[in-house]
Length: 314
Image (tube, rainbow, N blue to C red; front, side, top):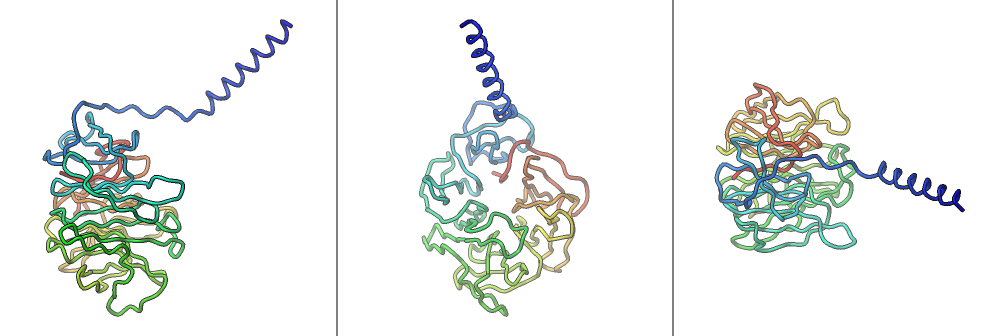
């Protein structure tokens, strides 16, 4: 009997040791401070805290310092004009997304149920126009033709909602079933936008008109554009030879001269970057946090916030 007890104890210890070994490693520790995430507090970088999955913030002057963490869960988040757009996983057994509009205190104002997996979210500078992109099939832009997206544009003032802009007429390009759109970025007139359109294995930077539902192509091999605060340039990811999983390098295109400049960040960036000012862009790198680099191609990348993604600036 005593032998059986010992054997049982050994087995129990073995099971416990195995369970401990198979446990996910502890999440990294970051400094957290008390306080609310307030979208009206100037000079704070808003982002997704990858440890908690919540919207968080730090002062841009000290991005590596303690962060404030909210109770709002999102996959992507963007703020402008004291408002926020949260693109989150939908509740329920089937894949889906929910676009949630929030006020400066992150209080919900409205929500829109969306098909697909969360991917991109953007607001215009004055907060009136919103856009989001979801993956309906596939989950990566790296292999052309193996994914399908839905990109929406919502006018909060008129409440005009285009749930999928694939009906947009693009000058000189025949409508086709393989057309996909993503990465909308708005100009100051709340009507004109830039975005990526793909068809027949090629990607194009398009300039669109949200009212007329028309667009014109400007340049090939442009993805996920982001318009500079002064409206003269777009930062974008360009497909280059190299990493098959993230085959892009970030560039800046001058819209007046159409001259493009490769940036000092040489790692593949699969993100729609944000402009911190007219000279600096920020972006997320999986497992590497949020980084920044000069928009003129000079300098070196620097990490802003570890264990974070989806940056935007109050």
